[in-house]
Image 1 (cartoon, one colour):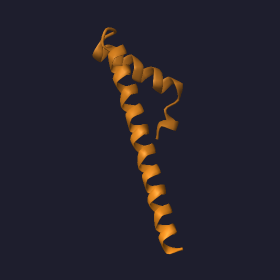
Image 2 (cartoon, one colour; image 1 turned 90 degrees about the vertical axis):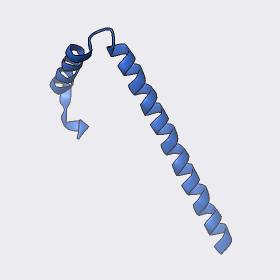
Image 3 (cartoon, one colour; image 1 turned 90 degrees about the horizontal axis):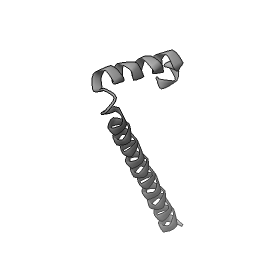
Length: 63
């Protein structure tokens, strides 16, 4: 879905965000968004590692 936005769409979204939130709030929103993405990636990585280790344990028990 995000692949279809393109440069003009991205500029439009940024202009609308600037109008709605103002220039003083935009860095805070960006920082919060970055932190959220970082936490999401960390949680996803942990879930994958847990699933892999659980699968490895199951394989060891059957062998």
